Length: 111
Image 1 (cartoon, rainbow, N blue to C red):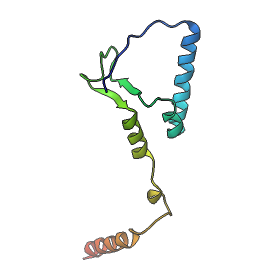
Image 2: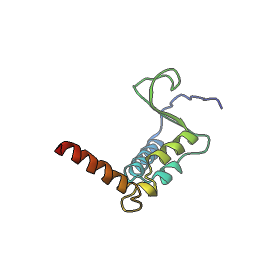
Image 3: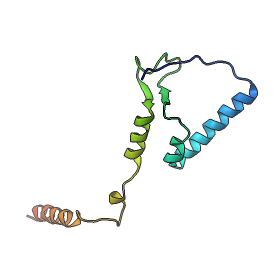
């Protein structure tokens, strides 16, 4: 899959408002951690690019804040979404080990 970069063109006021509303919607979804709704804004063949500096020519030859295809965006969502096993109260199978480790640590400090 190749990356095709386009050139920005001037927008009329109506198109500019549409882009502005899209950016507000995107920001709201991200702020609310509505990851799946945010992802639904983008097509399967999208390329999500946030340049690291103004005037950055491309995402390939310079460092970018984000330069991801759809699969990488999906993987990012998986990484930031807490799994059920990490939520408090769901599983405390490691608690006995933590208690043993803490008890040993306290015993060493008393000695």
